[in-house]
Structure formats: C-alpha cells, structure tokens
Image (cartoon, rainbow, N blue to C red; front, top):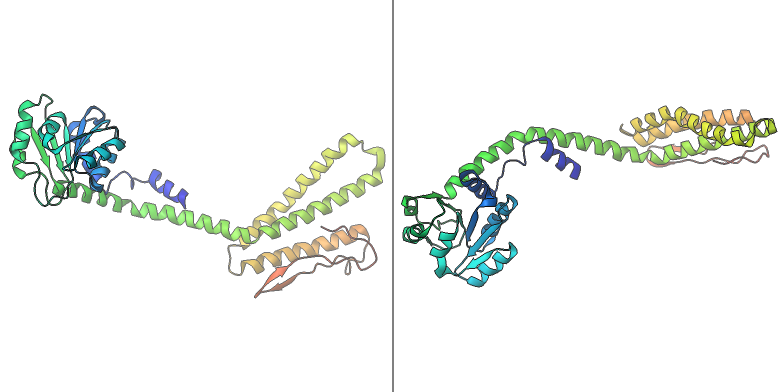
Length: 322
C-alpha cells in the first residue's frame, strides 16, 4: 500500500500541515525571521524534543546551529550530529549574543533563562531581534523575558494553537484520503482475484497456441515447396497474433469472473466450455471420433479445486498434447 500513501501525500494537502510541536517551532521561526539558511539557531537542552527541533530546522535550510546544556558533553555530542558547536552553560550570555533564534527544550522543573540573562546578551548584540521559542513544559524561559527590548517570546501555548489548526486542516483532508485508499484497495483486490485464474489463462493460451501451430504446420506440409522457407516464420508469427486476438475476450471474461462469488468455479466452467469447443474442432480436423478423442479430464466441485488435463485419444492415434 505504499503507492496509496504516496498518492495521499501528493494528491491531498494532508502532509502539508504539521502535527508536531518541533516542526511547528521551525515553521514559526521561519515565519518570524525569514530564511533559516541565513540564521543562527541555539538549542537549549539535548533531549528528544531538542533534537527533533534541530532536525526540523535543518530540513528547512538551517546551517548554523549551536547547542547548550548543563552537561557540556551532551551538548557537544548533539552538536556534532549537525556539524554545529557547543557551549558550556556558563557561556549562556555569549551563546545568546551569537544566536538569532533560541529553541528551549530542557526537562528542568523551573525556568533556566531569566530576563537578566537576556538583557545582558542584548546589550552586546548587533544582530537585531532575538526570537525565543519555548517548547518545554514547564517553561524554560521566564515570562519577563518578553519585556526585554528587541526580544520576541513564544511558548508552548502558542505552538499548540498552531498544531491544533494544522490538525483541523488534516482532518479536512481525511475524506479525500479515504477515497484514494478505497480506490487502491479495489485495484489490489482485482489484482489478487485475477491471480486465481492466472494458471487457467496460461494453460488456455498454451493449448490454443499449440493447436494453432499444429494446424499451420499440417497445412505447410501439405503445400510443400509452394511456400518458401523465408515466408514460413512470418506465417507462424501471424498465427500467434491471431491466437492472441481471438483469446483476448476470453481472457477478459475469465478475469471478470474472478471478482465474483465462487469465482474459481465460474472461471473453470468458462474454461470447460472453451475446451469442449476446442476438443470437437481439433478432433474434426484430425479425423478422429469427436466424442472419444482427447476428452478433457476436468472435475468441478465447489468444495474442491478443479483439475485440468487431457486423455489420450482412444482410437489409436497419438495426440499432440498441449
């Protein structure tokens, strides 16, 4: 069903609206500050949420990233994954001075960034606004940080409303996605049921090709040299094409039967009718007794699989088996 998923993503808008807080944070940073490829991002914390936030921003073009954590080794390890740099915690003002956007995602039970920390950094900054996006619960950034000049602060509540809006857009796409899935399921079931009659179709075509080839060779042997060798292969090719055209409708009918209840029995009954006609025509051509020659051995039982075969001619003539 991978194809169904691809169709759902490309033919509907269900994948264009994020339901992730980390992706919502990246979208918000881009909306507030513009192209992430021209910005510097500082991520505070090294847990799963912090890494997801970095990953979301990197996918949107971020190239300059730094990590800071109370445990420097953790910050360094995460920064290396994204070719970034790490700061010791006591270098927080320096890190804030360097950044354009700060994503905070620690597991601390209280705020870890105060208004004083931010004010100190802003006094030394020459890079314009500083955007804080606090995705931690409880909050990592003190509410008073929003009062510092040239600072923008968003917290998890802002992001939740953005995620809720995205989820509403996704829910609106569900009927279209369900319609695509229904189409794909129907197509798959048709393919699956068609495989039930595949052996019957193969056997039918094989037998018809053998009979047609036998008829052609018998005719050519009677004509003899009247048909040059160079013309014989085109005649064989023409015979195969005729068989394909004649059997096309029968093949379509067998496949259509396969999607109905008791499809195996329906398909086999169609095949039996075709074999009965084939038997009588072949016997007539070969000069055999039509009611005894190459009687098809076919058993149809609604509880048992059908078996197909052919008996030897009963009048002493060697049959050409298909």
